[in-house]
Each structure stands twice: as C-alpha cells, then as structure tokens.
Length: 277
Image: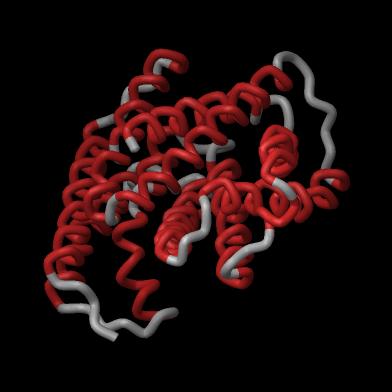
C-alpha cells in the first residue's frame, strides 16, 4: 500500500504538469485509453471468458465510481496543490460510515460520529476560508474523497466475492475510455510539449497503483491498509516542494494531522465494533 500511494502521488504531480497543456477530461480519457491498451494483451492471454464477471452489477458500479473518482481528482488538480488534493482524497475513511448509513442502511455508534469531527475540522483548516475564498477545485476534491470511500467499500465487496483484481481494473479502464470518449472528442485540445510522455508515465503509475491497492484489499481489512495509504500525503508534499517549491503552511499541516488522526480513529472504531445491519 505504501508503494501504491507513492506511485499515485507521483502520477498526480505529473498530471498537474500535464494539466497545463490540456483539460482534465482529455487527460483522464488518454490515461484510461493507454491503460486499456496496456492490459489488453493480459486479457487476450487469459481468454475472453476471463472477462465474464461473477458479480456484473457490482463490478460495473465499482468501475463507474472509479471513473468518476479519477475524473474529480484530476479536475481538482487544475486549481489546488497536489498535497491538498491527495489529503482531501484521504478523507475517505470519514465518509465510509456516512455511505454505509445512507446506502447500505447500517447503523453506527455515536463514538464513531464523534471521531469524524476532528477530520471535518481538518478539512476546514485545509480550505482556510478565513484566509481566502477556497478555489473551486476544493469542491471536486471533497467529492473525490466521498467517491474514493465508495470505491473502497465496493473493492472490498468484490474481493470478498472472488473477483480477480485484473478483471476489476480491466473494467475500470475500458469503461473509463468508453464513457469519456465522446466528452474528450468534444473538448479535445491538441496537447503540446511533453504531454504524451507525461501521459505514458502517469498511466503506468496509475496502473501499478490500482493493481497494488486491489491486491492489498484482498489480503487485509481497511483499518490496516488505510494508515499506510497516508504515506501518499507525505510523498505529494515532498514532491510538490521539490518541483514547485511549495511548502504547506501551518494551517495545512494542522489539517493533515487532524484528518489523519481522525481517519485512523474511525478505522480503529470500525474494526473494534463493526456496524450492525
């Protein structure tokens, strides 16, 4: 999970650089298309029957959520720092109890809701509305955190039902390329500079990160996996400092501490007292 987080943080930084050349929809489409082409030989070797899912509705739902999750993240990277985007994506554990209650109708102890409060305060520190109006990219980053939480829940459900990770990511890449093909064509901006090299490298990093995350969910529960995923925040901060010479201010650092501690506490409480139907 540590390697997956570092790969994704690096890909996010490269995508932020690529965003200077074209829009987020084109970037997301190109990355999904490259990943779909890259995984095609694996599918051909395994045979067409390999793509027949055990849980078609769940797999298609997870793929659609993953596409939206990726798109909202890439949109947010246009206007906000990478570390802020990755950090708000890491609020996913705070969203899990909310989604389980609203969608899966599971009840949760009051202590779990109290554990979410510091995380929400951390988000407020990151947005810093008293310093300046938050950029619109922060709204997409917050939605991205909720979508990432739903993706994590669905990933765990697919793993429990025996869906192979390769099949899961194949559906994500192909559905992403299909769904975004028309919007990308309508909004196409011919990239210049080093865009295609950036797209190839970021696609490879996204591909590796996705496979590693899915394998992690197959071998360990979320409360063990998620804390290791927080290394992506540290990696993104260091990379952004090195490339853009941007250092998070004290409010952002306080927000990081609050979100990480709240997320860990939520995951620990979920592990010690699982939700009841």
